[in-house]
Length: 602
Image (cartoon, rainbow, N blue to C red; front, side, top):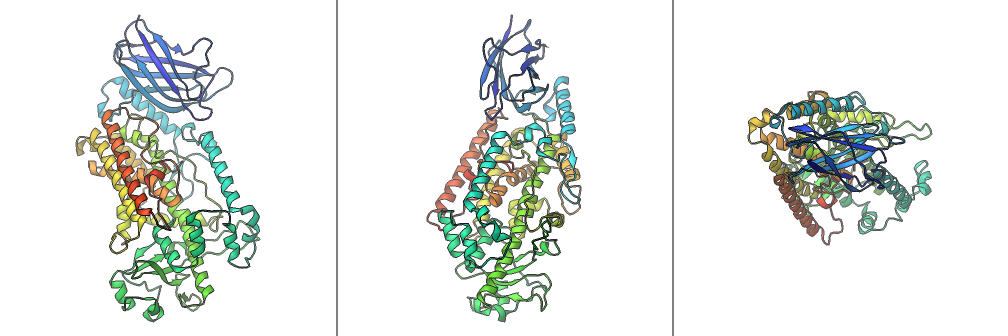
């Protein structure tokens, strides 16, 4: 009688193993096996990290393998199980791989197709088409859209972490790692010891410096030595944690009436302010979004304040960015003066601190939360709803848009202010603003000759190009023409779901509702990967490396070759960044691929 060898791999994460009963049914073009219990006598099956093999005997050859059905039934109490993959060796000696990479919970079953990626047009049999349809029907019941706040991007319908589908929850290992890292950070910052400082007035700036006394590395020590200086203030606009605010100033806004006489002593090229503007040496950081935002009022004992400043910046003859003038509100007047470097030491320093405070709120709520987490969640929910596991776009993005709930930290805009900020920021959140080269160009900071030390731009462009090249390789493997893209109803439904539901079809967002060419598809998929990985790292920093795909969703040789080429190109980028950083007192490595997490959920 024909015999099939079934090899089952259990995940290596905590609690991935199970003591429940595991059954398997093999389905081929000529028939199917009986429902078979996978069990070895006197052996503990399906332990964490185990790879176990079993023989399944059938009455007649099943023909070409099509599906594998896996069922989990309770033994004593429900015991979740994480299945990585199943491999079936046929009587003829062929091996068929079935990627799984999902949790089986309660008395759950999953039906797997082999690891070859397929577009809808590639499914020819009734069974294949039925499996594809049922998978998406099930997913749409699990991954439902919900409006967290009016005017926000839509998110997954879950109020707590436990309500999320098991496959996208943080696993226990990551959860413990997060808690340990958080506790270590609190310990290093001595926050408990200095908490009273934040609830009362500080005596002098040394109170601030004492908070970081236990952080010992070259960068932090250099920053602590120079944080009060103008060059450090300006440098953060290029390569700090929020390097997206600086823009070329082609004309002074009427709301910011800076004159040449105010700043003449700071200009180095014997040019007037107007001439410096025409020469492209003047930049602007406008925090208009902060105007009329409600400050945090959750603690009635502590009054908090917000500013909506405008900062004029100067690219001097040494190509250093220096602040020229600061106005802390959007409306000029006697009660809203323009602060200058020539003012008193502490007046100027406090003006810069107010700017940094506003920059912090924009960074945390808009640059980080909205433009990486919430946007990635839109892509992720739409992906699970519209793309089956066999779709190549699902396979390439599944790791990048793994979801987690986005919790808003308590800060000066808490208690409702962060909601107002996101609602206002949505007006400028367009699809093109998520395309890295377009966003850089829109701010007029795309020229390395004009702005030579903008490493965020330079490194970001390298990673964007490498990612786009990889995506193009994958797209060309599965789409032989633009017509194939247009006729892929699943990718078109995915794109429409993102725009019409995820972004609530807002006129200002300008997200595409359809894709017409392979180039369009490549750019769209590049935006998803880049937003969830590289850009999130640049504004938040993480630990799981871009280009590393531990879950083998693809089995085809051409795609694996494309992945290897991607890894090599990213390694070249990492090497170039490392060489560039050698000897620098302020090295920039946030876009270095060997430090970029694959997903915002990591």
